[in-house]
Length: 378
Image 1: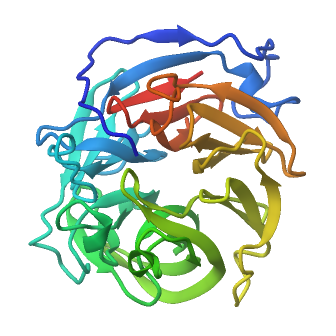
Image 2 (image 1 turned 120 degrees about the vertical axis):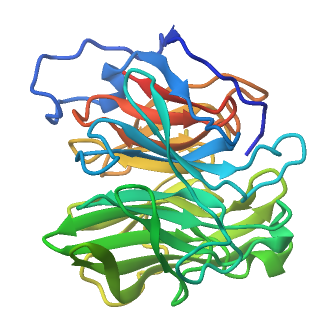
């Protein structure tokens, strides 16, 4: 992603969007209203800077906390930082070690600073936090790591999933068995069982030297609760494979990114080919569906990255190639597009990454990677 110096902002700024606005009907919060979800949102407001005390930059992962437990607070947004303070000017990517927590009123706190030299288990290459971020019942935070030693793709290693407790202490690492550059993630939990869907972008990419390779995967990783102990991995299944991926000097790596689950179908943002695919029976299948069915391709999609699912099951994705958020319905129609970032040339390119609906499911939090802030579309 394009990198710029951080802007430490303390006051809310709102930008009114004027494209495709319609009046929102009065319905219960989070209810599935008729018409595109994005048509009811018309304002982008700054929430807060995402830069912690150690200067980490480039916010990627975004998760709205649903349960107050330990140091996690319901309604706050957890954000992972991909790079350290040397980016810019040195461009050291894959070196971020912090998770920050942002309250709706803009209060910023550091939830965790992870020491790559003091991990409880293997994480090949160390720590470089990615967009893969979720919070499981009991306050177990799972975040992906795709680390580098010099900030370039040449030194990128397989990494792992890091499991932190509700106080921000790393209690477990989940590595190997298909985990190779975990890039994004979604999860669903029932009882004491959680299913993580994790995209992986390092299968053959470093060896490819910038050429496209079709080896990206999506894993379903089953975790079982263990009370006060970290959840235990009991199974790993490849549910998607053959996604295009490549290294990139500006973005480190480009490959399958955002994932979202609805009615048993897993939707995947194929960043390289600007399309969204659908993997059926994602919770139960025992084999790979390949890339799945192509739901939509091209059009307003321009290197889609982060993903969220609306109350009625539409798919929201943000573009890496411009500053747009795009809404696609389950029939594959791109029903709404809105510009939410216009910085740089072309406008918004490289600024967007992770996004998450707020708890009422009537607004969208998203990170502004260009200015190192969390914004909300409402």
